[in-house]
Length: 207
Image 1 (cartoon, rainbow, N blue to C red):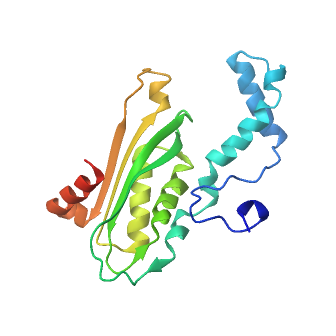
Image 2: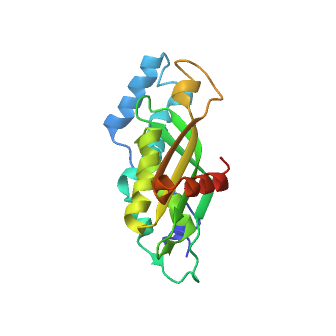
Image 3: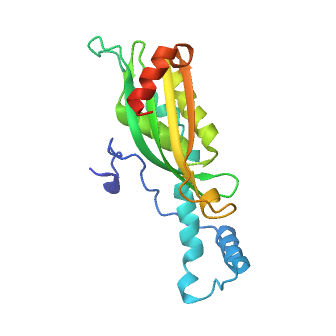
């Protein structure tokens, strides 16, 4: 049974589209007000359905508020054949919205950890990222939340998270400077305390 038929989401699906929801009148009217304030007519043909579309889009953009990303780390595996090296998921694409202008943040993340005695399915690392990204965010906090969540729930020897992203609040308004990437990182455990381990994980990430 597929998700559309009422079954469980497939493991490979990072984010499931939300069910179509009824839009409260005050939410739709808020979007209509913004359209009028921007200088257009919310009653013209091309904009008639826009308020509800925007409202439903934001329910999807903010899907992370209705889930605890840590739940994806609850199922772990102990039988790893003695593997005790770095586990890395590299260049995971994500999107978020900045909390200052509600403008898009588009980027990629590399997430690594050094297992102590258990590992997690690799798709779960991406799910943790998306769970925190689908909220109003700042990149620094997003980076810290992902790393802290993995550290707390997997108890690894070390965690490393590096995020690169472009911010529409900078590229499409304000200073109007496109093509600029912001990089943030959080190193925990051995990746913070041991220079050699930090260099190794950054090299594997391509830095």
